[in-house]
Image (cartoon, rainbow, N blue to C red):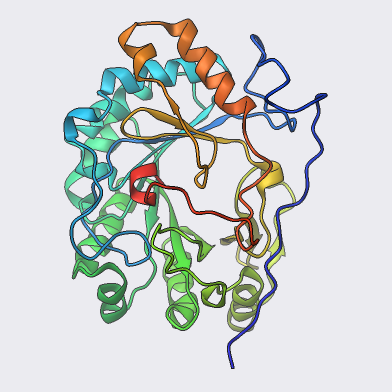
Length: 354
């Protein structure tokens, strides 16, 4: 008998302005506020749609729907877009992909962005190339990494990624820790696949002073392979961890806009759960995204995007800021994963940026 779970719809939001986003004029001043009253301060910037592993829930086994390399934004363009965002209230930037370490001289971009008045600058990586790039990234001013790692089991790692790279990933993590990086591990949780990994990867993170974050399995592909029965929920994983390590205490002072609900073990180590499916957090979302080919998106699962390349060609900071405001103003209440009305985005996730 299939395991059944309750998929919670996004919490309804009340618009803070009269009328719809189409009828209401886009603000021309102030911060990046949408029609639901959410202020946006977090910017995810994809620097490439290429990746060097082939996680089955994200990438096809062979090939890929890649854009031309010539179509990717230059580092100077990314810096200009980031500056525009900062002027409008962006305070956190995370570089993503694909795999951002595949972008040549990405440390140069880090160094440029580190000059901006940000409260946080981070990079998401699968860590296959981390041992080769970590020193340059640290020298460039990067202090935090989000490392994607679903399992410590070599056979399961190969099953998930279709690549035999676990040893390089672990070596990269150890080197980055020795260089002083703060690291958060992100692990996708999939029923009938990664349940055996919840305890070992949590122990691995705690022993090394890293926070582990478990992400409920989402419809990350455009191929219709996702099914709700594959979702290993945050509540189930919490029970599993408490049975092994003892009670988890909610962190009272955690950022309410962050996607993860965080808990603390008795020894002070942390674990987070990103319950995008069972407990959507759309009502608190403060994130905006930029694809490697120059499209602004208000959600990972959005079905529309804003092309900013013309504004970059015209060297118009005013138009860039207008497009930022327009994109945020048109943001929907939430993604509706699990609802009959949900539609996956036309782009694959590696083309959008994680």
